[in-house]
Image (cartoon, rainbow, N blue to C red):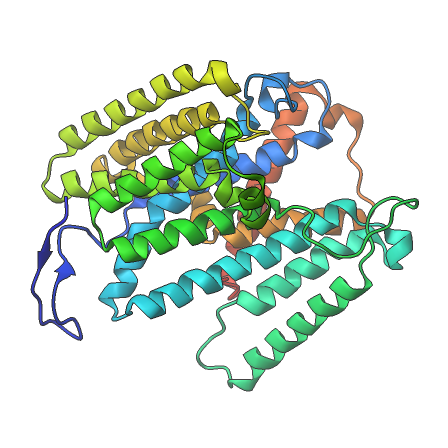
Amino acid sequence: MNKTSETTAGNKTANEPALFSTQRIATIDILRALTMVLMIFVNDLWSLKGIPEWLGHVKGGVDGIGLADVVFPAFLFIVGLSLPYAINNRRKKGDNEWQLMQHVLLRTIALLVMGVFLVNGETYNAAATGMPKMFWNPMICIAFILIWNTYPDSWKKYIPMALRAIAIIGLVILAIIYRGGHDESIHRFSPSWWGILGLIGWAYLVSGIITVFAKNNFWIILGGWIFFCIVSMVAKAHLIPREIMTIIPNAISGGTLTGLTMGGVLTTMIFQYFVKKGENLKMTLVLIGFAGILIILSIITRPYWGLAKIGATPAWLYLCSAFTILAFVAIYWVADIGKKAKWFDLIKPAGTATILCYLVPYLVYGIRNFLHISLPEVLRTGGVGLVKTFLFAMLCVAVTGILIRIGVRMKL
């Protein structure tokens, strides 16, 4: 599935991959938007009571998954789906391998920084820090936006530079004054774990490097995916030396998270190969077959290590990959083949400004806490509570859309 052609158009000189498209399809943005809405929804379930257990996360040590346990792997898989399009598009604009690597590294750093700051907010100790907890997340989120926002070309250059400098200094100060933990075990700012964004960052780093140097070679991508699937099983069998597991971040050495992202890259390679040839039906059958194989692998591996998000088991990797592939195919037929992408316009901001949308709930929670807004119990219970949480997710998407319209556009 690797084919190249000579070209002299623009600044492209030779051997640019011709079989793989740089044109994004609506399906990926829609799938990402749906996943982000679902992520905000399940992340707000903590505020409810009297709701079905299957909606939330399954507790550690339990064999099984809830709805909340399929959202994060779907997002990782979608990161992989986007990678070939993003990298080929940058190549088309003239980026060489070093420039592509710079982009991957800088984006990884951004995700790690945001992940670590957000995760420290989970154990924040207001008394030890000397600042109310309600200010932590809003302040760091505003700093993130100022640092990674795309500012208008009409602005004088020193204005964005000054805003970014202020935001960076602010984050440094917050990290210095931060204290977390309980009164008997206070700790300073540190990556106790990398947070959701940080885990995405590590998986993106490895998958990005492989995708850059694979240069659309299907077999390299396939080999990368198989390698991390094997690493996932070997790690769960405790066959990887402890020294390696302590040196290399678990998001990489554990295999599962990078396996999810590489699965997305592999799916896009298969998808582009058949769609470029106009064989949508064959593409659908192949991807459904791929999903079927993954489900079988999940069934085979489950007796050994269980099916669980906490612990990132191989069965979880395979089953959630299969779910995302099937959703991808279904949305493609509705949005791109059926030309019904407009059906999803209401949630479009969540798919095109995903990181910004991810940060918006932290800002909304901060405003709610500052204003001491508390909903009555009837609005936080059962079906009524679920409607409230869904509306909260849609509010966050709407706020994201408003921020986009006033010029807030984070670009990592």
